[in-house]
Length: 568
Image (cartoon, rainbow, N blue to C red; front, side):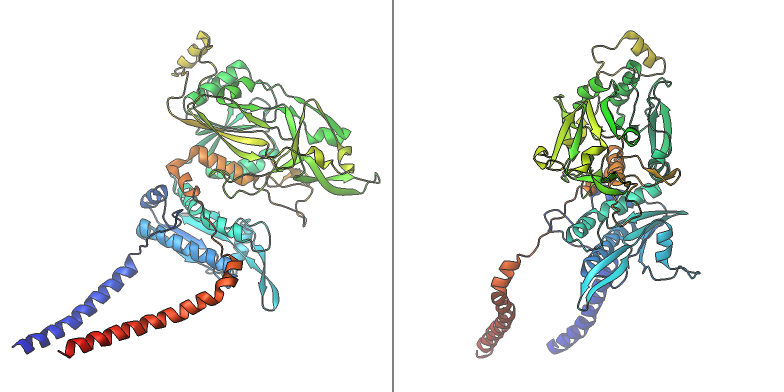
């Protein structure tokens, strides 16, 4: 009887084990999970991203164009993208799908390759140079993804590398930004109503082709842009999530400043790109010299109250952009560094400037932070370590670059150019608002506030040209940040002006808290090559001998236990 039970139990045990194994494999194919042991939580989605994915109502599809025989760095980026999108799919469910497509594949139903389609959308490939056994190999890489939602398509740049050579640090930064870039694109494309942004005019702000790239290729695509004349309108609408002040050239009246102040007190956010000094290339090209003087914008007291001072000076930097100069006076121009066009950098100390490239400026003013109770200041952009400041009135002459600059004068480093202010701002008019000012608010249903009720934030940048584009070849605008004299040549360098502007707006709006995803910091943990060489033999012996010894030890213990058991 006992033997029969054993036989029956053995027969039942085998199918039970098979059923359990099949169930485990099926569950593993449906659900995917992992434990994130990294210090920076590299493989953990932020709460904001999870909330976004859970609230997707209709299907979203992401096409990634990193399929192909690429060098190891881009294979790793492709694998990281696949892992991230799989995480997205598991959180969102059936409303999220993704595909990896080779740029050489043909678009369904046509004879056009996907690579040509991407290029037509303005997504140019990287002519990548990699090292192979035969020497150097060149190939086109399209580090892009397309997010599809209903009848809309939004491109995502997965890699911001600026050189044809593989840069490990840039690849690491690209991996760090994957979650934010894809999630931010999904957030924008699935939004039922665009966020409203105001563009202030009425004080000499640019309204010509210089803002074409800013307006047509950026603001009008992602936001609902509205022009706002601060001098003729009674107040700044609360519906403006951000009010852009771009290079004003005329003084602000007390009434205009009062409207700005109360907009801020009511939670409105200001993004200001301002030139305190009047220094323009047009005047320099006509006379070959110009005197930079204070515009008299009358904004000093307002900014000072909020915790910042825009100085009446210009930054000169050895790290700068180029301009053509007639060196020999014979009409043959040569591109030379122009120290008044500083190329600014960031310390990656905030989600706004994290993994940000160089930002080019034109006649930039320095910024100082001043004491303001409860206001936190974060420097976003600054000069290089080799810079200087010249006070106004300053004579700027085209003859300066005929000879090399005196390097010993450029000893001031990291001069602040852009600053983020956060906290509860106090009104400039807290103790000086007239009854007429208060009545003007009440007439339109407003109420005078001497201080912010909740925390607020604003960004002040000491250069109005950062977000403007140059115009070439008969009113043909080029992308912001591009030098018109190197555009389309081998010396062209795509500065990160657009990225900086977009990051500022995204952070000020910060819908859904996606900036949390952008704040991730991937630490590149590289092997110590010297130590690897010294300890190579020891670790090879350990890796080969230890497993063998463990097997032998297990066999000895097994035989000893078996002998002890059956010898009785």
